[in-house]
Amino acid sequence: MRFAVLGAVLTALSPLVCHAQAMDDPEAVVVEALVVNAKLPGPAWWRISDGDTTIYMLGTLASLPKDMAWDTSVLSRRLNGAFALILPPEGRAGVTDIPALLSLRGKLKSDRPLDQMAPELAPRLARVRTQLGKKPGSYNEWSPLGAGIMIATDYQKTTKLESSEPERTVDRLARKHRVKTRLAGTYKAMPVVKAVVRQHSAEVGLTCLEGVLSEAEAGSSAVREAAEAWANGDVRGAIAGPRNFQRCIRGLPGMPELERRAMDDEVAALTEAMKTPGHAVAVFSIRGLVAQNGLLDRMRAKGFTVKTPGD
Image 1 (cartoon, rainbow, N blue to C red):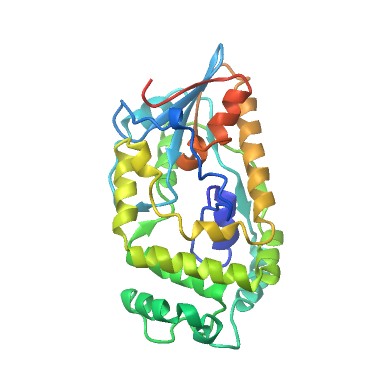
Image 2 (image 1 turned 180 degrees about the vertical axis):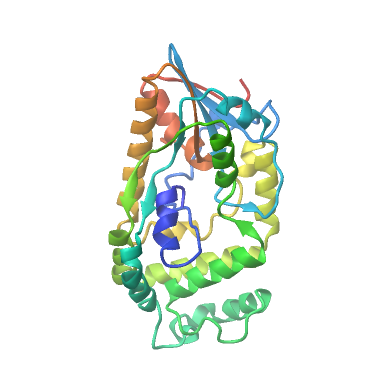
């Protein structure tokens, strides 16, 4: 899922972090003029500016391989003196939601074995179970959607992907430079979690399961290659990473509306920040930045100047 709030919706059910795309994928088409490799060391940066304000935009991936080093020198320099660090919207669930979450998690289980619910996927399920070091029948108690979440969680663990990076490093450096963080929005996660669990169709559940199986079967090499490209400022390589599981999320109830709301809130947060003289730093999904009608495309349409990593 492209937004932190979408990740929070599913992390309320498991450690999995997803970055959502539509089944008719609104981020499939990118603005080629924005897909430019970085001249400076480290990941790619874009800039939004008007007469007296500049916002430096760092495009990020959903996760990075554990302990992967990347050059933070440009990030540190741009955080120095920044009036804000702007982050995507965040979904939140409180302590009082825990009983409901546990109940909802239980509803992702099934009375029928998974192999019977998805017979056409049974051979692939067996191969992925072996690949992940799981015993036969390990996921049989789950519905297709529940199994997809559990398999994706185990896949992240075996491939040593950290969904908290690079955001954790950005947050650490922001605190070091005493830069205040601004979320583009905060949403209650529970209403969407309830809708996802209770109202999703069997077809979408199978789509999610098939998608995560495809990513697991591909192994970690494609993910690592995209991460290394990102760290080296290779934008095209960074956005070429696996996106198979992502196509399921927007078929889930409430997700398309949530993503539209999140995009609107991101645009609003950046527009508001442009009223403050000086410079700020913003961190958003790299694919969402360069997509047609994505964040940079929409900010340019509002009259702001957009510069690429090659400028």
